[in-house]
Image (cartoon, rainbow, N blue to C red; front, side):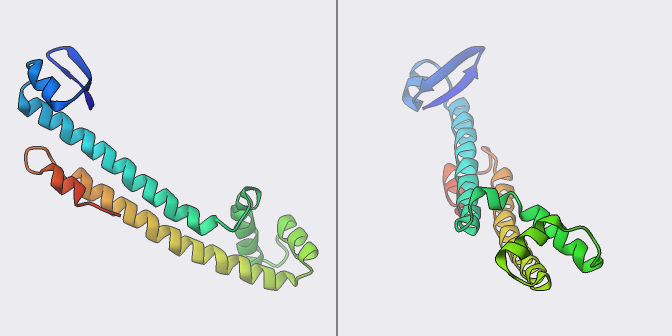
Length: 150
């Protein structure tokens, strides 16, 4: 089922056979079907990327995740200047009963690991999107779209 416009008529929820029976040329249907499959594939790619990104954060509560940027910025500021204000890290270190220098080391280590892992996932998603975007209905087939997999 697909929706498209042909000769100013809107075809919504038509199958290929119904569109052909309504007088829509096969070439029009093929282009619209190709574009719809590209859109579906992009959604599939994005959903797979999101699932992969979510696995990186599965062990953390959402509220803690929202503090990651602040933790990292305070930790990097502290490395540059030990007198830099670090209210979040101070509270974390105090309540964890952990040395602040150790906490800063761990925050930086985790931030760098997350950046590398998420960068790999995002890069893969972008590579697949690029591969999808170069496909055209006049030079490629639906099988070419289907061949792009996570």
